[in-house]
Amino acid sequence: MILSPSMLSSDFANMESELTALKKAGLKWVHLDVMDGQFVPNITFGPPIIKAMRAKSDLFFDCHLMISEPGRYIRDFAEAGADLICVHAEACDHLERVCSQIAEAGAKPAVALNPHTPLDVLRYLIPQLSMVLIMSVNPGFGGQTFIPFCMSKVRELKAMITAAGSDTLIQVDGGVTLDNARALVEAGADVLVSGSAFFGHPPYDARHRAFQDACT
Ligand code: DX5
Ligand code: ZN
Image: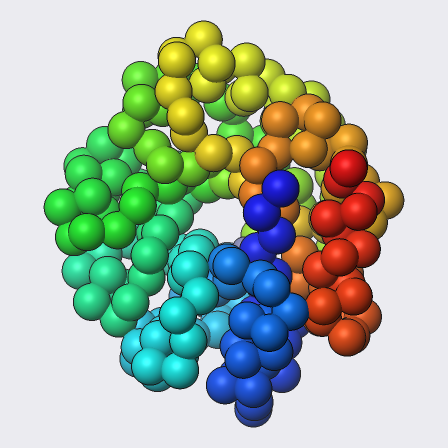
């Protein structure tokens, strides 16, 4: 299991030390939540902040774009240093084109689905995706409660990916805790995002270990 701590719950005034602490705690990925106040009712940060973080960290930047029409900004996020760019299916009129743009810009393409969005929208795209993100809360805020039907959605997505013969990763984001991490991995999750259940419980090395232990 790859744990991708969501910087949304980190100390925004001390991002450099947060990134350094994650690296020291053995984390490989970090989850960066970009919000535009339109696709979701909250605003966070964009390419300039990611570029500044990139200068201070070599962690894998897992960028979750909760913005309308993300195709307008793919190049900006790739140039800022995003390793993976995840767009919402609900935010794109031409999702295949946006995924191709991500790959052409040199980043790994991924698609996120809101809790109510059926998996079928990804049926033809799975082979070209590095990752699918299953939102297990309605996007916009940290600290929300996991929506139970998302567990079977992960299981169904795993079956779809296996049937397609693809190595697409499954990420789960929202309300992930030590209590549901194991069940999510058993259902097929490869990458777990954790905001409040991670940053709210330092030290990070012990918390990272606790998540890994919960899944084995
Ligand atoms: C929510 C974001 C999440 C958020 C998760 O819209 O996409 O990444 O930070 O926070 P927790 O783990 O607290 O639910
Ligand atoms: Zn996220």
